[in-house]
Image (cartoon, rainbow, N blue to C red):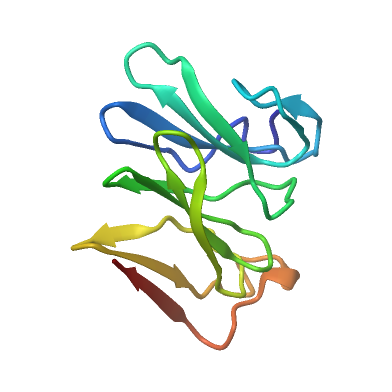
Length: 149
């Protein structure tokens, strides 16, 4: 798939074993996820072998969005991603198999990556209505969410 920004946007993350990035599907076209052969019309995320580029796994964004799937960050075997959909779901994904470990809705779309430090992840939101579409206005002023394990 592709979209206004191409097949993937917002860069990638690596743990030296794999390279992770998002999948853009702006126009909601059907495509096959590899290697599962599941068909989706959403965006999603993909893990590729860092040495040869072979796709290890790919998953569809469960938020059912045909727009972009958010930026990626990785630490300690977990890929953290944010969804720019209205619910702003944060996902923690197992880097070995692409299974979702947990998710949390922050209530507003997240367009930035997740920051990781000392066993915690930080997710900020606070888009200005000038820079964001009208339906993605922030809740109040600015929010910072922290998840520590």
